[in-house]
Length: 456
Image (tube, rainbow, N blue to C red; front, side, top):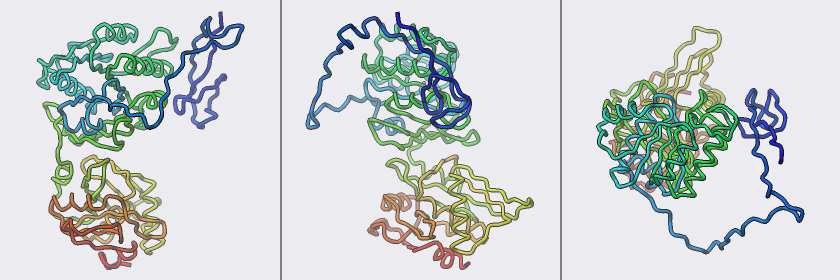
């Protein structure tokens, strides 16, 4: 009988080593190695004639045509959009988000919607009793939905139940609470999370059952456990939002059956999550009289144009070192734009505190927001408000030049729908002019400073 082999795996990069160390030699992270016991080799692993032969894998050429995977629509348009057009049969989906952000509420509403559409749906909770899930369902008005509930953490029992019931959809809340009796570590450990995710994903493919896994996130905002779990599943969704705002954003960061970076927008109410068909109008609904530092950015999230408001505040710093605070955008990119303003436009921010916020709890990551941020900073510093009907977008280079961005026409058409009549944009970009917005092309940031704010 072969001996079991003890190895150590890094929870940050999934690197495997035979010796424990305080620092991972692959990614350099500290205190991320945890012990796991590899499965022993079976007696048929090899023979005197060499390794045992496996079955022959069926091969096909690239010209072969396979039928597209069947999809099921949830009846929740924002969820179907993020999934790429509906839930694919036999797929494994991982949903992550901060505690209390509304993951269980969203998935319970989705389970009820799928069940009413004719899918046999099972909801397994490892964190709450069935009575607690029923209480939430009644509060959401879903008490009569044909969803089968279960409360269990033993993965062997869960798989046996799913094998017997043969549902179309199974929701596991959450994968960090599941444990497999063949793995000698506590629930929530790296080895347990990886083994449970592998078993559930393999079961979904083998039986053609769609499985949705809920995953906790760390304080850094990443799904807890080894990153290899995100590689195992077909789709990874993040449920984002600020506790102080009622808006919630479901974002696809990986999707084998549809576009990544697609978003669905929801509004948290007392009766659950409501869909937001026009996110731009919602994010700008509280925007009143134009104020210094307020700039509307026309962005693209997945395939959808979204207008959001950047808010900047520049004030003298009472401290020796000025403060830089960012919410909803990349702090490193803010530092870059401040450096470009000082080096290329001779506008210093030394001794000034800078605060930047994306209104409504939205998180923006695309470089097309560079120009909007720069204009917001200039507007706040010069105490000059931009016209209310003006939108801004464009990428900023380190030389101060402005570069065109993709899907400029779609950005401008969305702005037209909401009543915007002018746009500060980079030159070029193949804009046809059919959008009805008056364009103000700017070659570089110095031109913006001189023509829009009269500074320099």
